[in-house]
Amino acid sequence: MRLKDQMPEFDRSGKWLNSKRLSHNDVIGNKPVLIYFWSVSCETCKKSTPKVNKLYDTYDDQLAVITVHMPRSERDKDLSEVRSAAQVHNIFHPIFVDNEHTLTNQFNNRYVPGYYLFDTNGKLRHRHSGSGGLQMLQKRINRIVNQSE
Image (cartoon, rainbow, N blue to C red; front, top):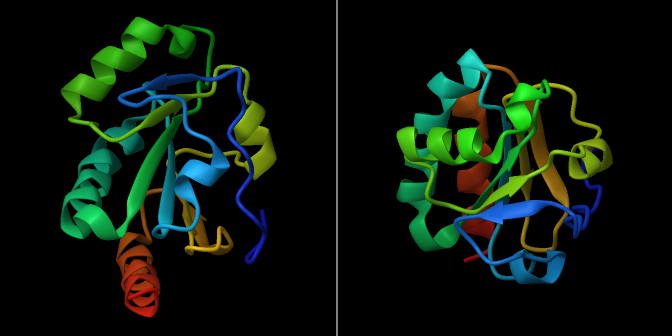
């Protein structure tokens, strides 16, 4: 995805945890949205997830956070393993389990962790992957949240 691209629709075949099935219209328009790609087998994700949880708590009702579980192997597709990891890492926001990589491919996402920040109109405003860059992500969130107030 490139900056200012529109957020893709969530695939109907994916499984949702911690939420009812969400659509594009459920999340666009009310507040900025952070889409966080992770995997149960990703060690970097295990270190990054608490930081995403902190963003979720800090911005409370000003930012929607949706995690996308992107399996990196057949073993990662075990739904009970995803549920267990979500519980261990205190992921209480919606999780889209993308075992078929449908949404992952729409985002053209190749790495975990991956971060995609969309404004209230659903346009991509920031993206990055890997362990660094969370400070820049928070600056972008602040800018977008303050613009939408």
